[in-house]
Amino acid sequence: MQKRYRWLLLGIILVGTCLRMPITAIPALLDTIQRSLQLPASLLGSLTTIPLLCFALLSPFAPQLARRWGNELTIFIALVFLTLGDFLRGFSAIWLLVGTLLLGVGIAVMNVLVPAVIADHFLQRLGSVTSLYTFSMTLFSAVGAGASAPLAKQFGWQPVLQILALIAGVIALLWLPNLRLNHRLVSANNQPKVRSVWRVRGAWLMTVMMGIQSLLFYTVLTWLPKIMTSRGVPATTSGLMLGLFQLAALPAAYFIPTLAAKAKQRSDLIWAICGMFVLGLAGLLVPSHSLWYLGVLCVLLGLASTGAFGLCVTLFSLKTTTAAETAAISGMAQSAGYLLAAVGPVSFGLVYGALHSWTLLLLILLVLDVMMLIVGLAVERQQTIFD
Image (cartoon, rainbow, N blue to C red; front, side, top):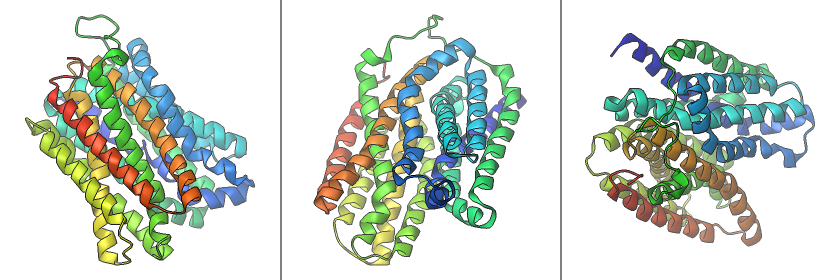
């Protein structure tokens, strides 16, 4: 591999480290932030909802920015937004919201364009590079969730956010050499636009698959501890189980993209991922307090949720023929996916508040998993999304 592409590979891995960590670091700090800034409880939920809405609303526009400025330059600008957002969040309640909005914009753009950069420069190593990218994203997502509260207790919550800003700023500086490779998105016939992805049947199938995957992941991530504690499991044990859920995601984050890229047919992989979801969700219907039983369910759900995400990200590249098509389908699918991710946990919380039962909600998740299986197999049958 040429030296300049080694630096680009390092940049992709480093970008992956800061795409989830600024968001997953916040939930454990909510009580501390509320006390420090005297915030109403209703405002706290917006700290995770604002980025998800940014992902949903801005993802379709990222390819347009890349066509104007180029992939690598647009990612650099997004890193600057992320750095500013992290830095500003610690000053006041207003700046907390402004900073959250800025980092949401930056992450939304990078979510879409990094798969396009991988497809553009690493087509022969698509699976392995995507594996490194998703692994770094998943690993530092868990680091952000687990380390933010202990660090805040030791140093304060504002310095924790400043550390995140420093990390993003250093990554932005390390990304600068990649501007030499700056590449504007063009279609196969060298026109600045690809056929409208919103009119392509295969794109809608891919979007539904990504949307259901996002809803399942964020709903399970949000309510798994609550499901356990509502059935008599101690809160400390529920927290440990959520940590296991995130830890179990690491093998899937690394191996699933590689397996997907090497396989001639990915239908077996789709069946396996959806099957693990079925076992994990159906297992939660059993009100067991057994630690090993709950641990197995968390491992299954962790493997399934991150495996589904890694598969979707890989399919963005495998089922398209140009980087422009990859960016277009990535923008469309992530837009709908994160919109569902923002709506899903909230609506499920409202339903639980009315019914005080998880049974119906878990059954709904099982039905959605079956829908994802059907749609995923339909996507796999197509040679490319734009067929």
